[in-house]
Image (tube, one colour):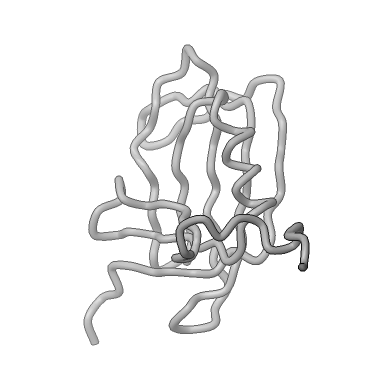
Length: 129
């Protein structure tokens, strides 16, 4: 059986964690963490639990390479603390949302929305005529 290189999961819940400052080593790179959004969900192919941690770093932090452990069904990516509000906004307002763990190209590990039509808007707030 071939080794799985990519895992896609639907994000079902998330948790936001704010930090004063945490310094943590990721493969020899010291990250200065100010926030973390932990995204949990269910695999599209296997119905297993998956996790993607999105670390939001201080402006003066070095940025580690993405961390992906397909066998453990988890990964981590690193973004600037200035991006946290936009990221959480997407999680709050879009559905479905997917996590992509990329063992083949870790730098492509991502969070995406579903494919929706242009101009769809927010169906929950449309006025019916």
